[in-house]
Amino acid sequence: MSDFFSLEYAQNLDKNDELREYRNRFHFPLDSNGDKKLYFTGNSLGLQPKSTREYINQELDDWAKYGVDGHFEAKNPWMPYHEIVAEKLARVVGAKPVEVVAMNSLTANLHFLMVSFYRPEGKKRKIVIEYDAFPSDVYAVKSQIKFHGGNPETDLIYLKAREGEHTIRIEDIKAVLENQSDEIALIMLGGVNYYTGQLFNMKAITEIAHKNNIVAGFDLAHAAGNIHLKLHDWGIDFAAWCSYKYLNSGPGGIAGIFVHEKHLEKDLPRFEGWWGQNKKTRFLMGREFDGIRTAEGWQLSNPPIFQLAALNASLDIFEEVGMEKLNIKTKKLTGYLEQLVNSLGKDTIEIITPSDVTQRGCQLSIRVKNADKSLFEELTKQNIISDWREPDVIRVAPVPLYNSYEDCYKFSDILKKTLTKN
Ligand SMILES: *Cc1c(COP(=O)(O)O)cnc(C)c1O
Image 1 (tube, protein in one colour):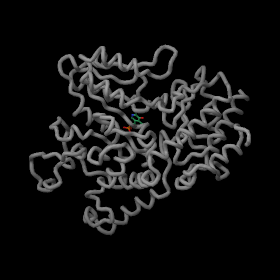
Image 2 (cartoon, helix red, strand yellow):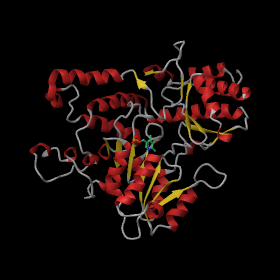
Image 3 (cartoon, protein in one colour):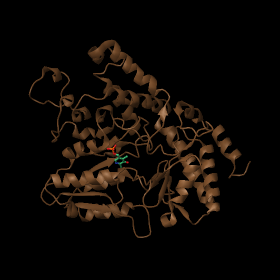
Image 4 (tube, helix red, strand yellow):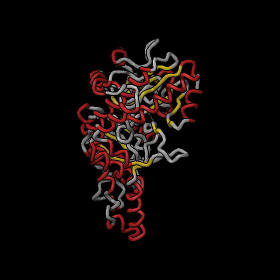
């Protein structure tokens, strides 16, 4: 058996990895020698599947060949194109196909879903969110509060980690929801926090919320395609995610929403558009909206087919592999990187992502003491693509579909040398 901290050890792990071949299905940015860079930002923009071009070309060809008739005549008719995608998306997030649809972009969808699910009434009007939530989510909830005539200063409750801790404890979330249940209308958290990489127990939070008559929604930007989600079984009310991170659909790719089946027969308030209209009457051009009784009812416009095609290319890879296998590899691969980084024993860096595998996905957030960004800059010079998040964190996400144990070894080796030099 070779030394744990060695290239040979890493290569051996790759040899025994049944998903190792999937790496060859993606394009990697290359360094000046033509070698793959060490890509650890699948949590920001997933790599391009080599098949994406073919999927988009199909639609370009069909548009050229059929013009408007492509809505029905294309190989993948555009009229129901989103339905093919919905089935596959549903499997990725653990939902029924009727509960999901690909549409719009993430922040837009958070707003559309809050139109239905943030219904402040009297005193019960507050929203709960993480203190270090992604800024767009904070802007979205604050503006929803203002839209309903509320005051974000008093109507927004931030969940914070305890003094000296980095992640939020479930008992603290429970205490807030129980103690202020008369005043809280909605809890909306990132399923995986973008900064710390903490995975929340969405099932438990939803149960606590529902006991207290609070709606539970999640932003799954960092969870979709990363975590083995069971949105339906967990009873979550609604969720939204983007698909350009772990779902590899390309920059600005079409996003997705989930609305639990239990809400689909209700007449929830909603912003409506013709693509949400009953398909039998959509083209009768009437004045009365008769919404589809699935998540599709939330659609406004006819969808961007090229974006759906790119998403479809990626989802076909997920169909082949399945979230179960990806999750098994995540535990091993991220666990391996964690061990390597911790073995450096450097007191200038510290992993703030939970070490408990049930509280994280593939991302590790490495806090740099004294917020010294030069370490990150040095790593970047050495062909590592990771990212720096203010004030003091380097995020690295070994993605089970395309990162290797060798990538992780090389990262930690470069990190070790860089730390020793400084
Ligand atoms: C990436 C991300 C966003 C980005 O929003 P867009 O509307 O897709 O630009 C929003 N929220 C979270 C939590 C994210 O991680």
